[in-house]
Length: 102
Image (cartoon, rainbow, N blue to C red; front, side, top):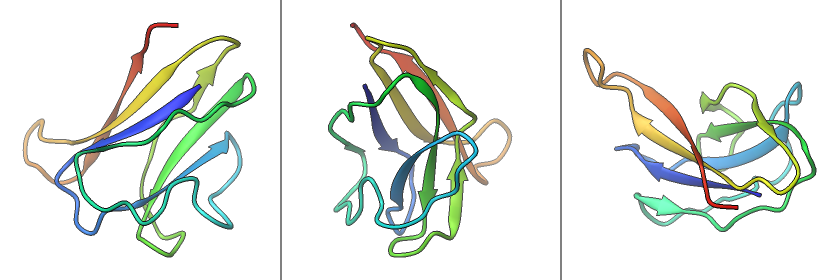
């Protein structure tokens, strides 16, 4: 299972697409119309595979940020956290992958 947390100073709040690696965001977002940040989604039950989480401008597929592929095995729970990338200057986003208790 996979869930997403937005813990970044992002405005407007992006839509979230969870897609298998190699695919692009299309159709309806996995999570849209997010009211505020920080925000945590519910867990999504997914088949074992590699996934990418896309953050897009609301109502579009215009990319704001995307994760590297996330390998999700059977019976694994993971949380993707979108954070501000402030290593030198806060000028973008980064993501953290947290291994949740299974």
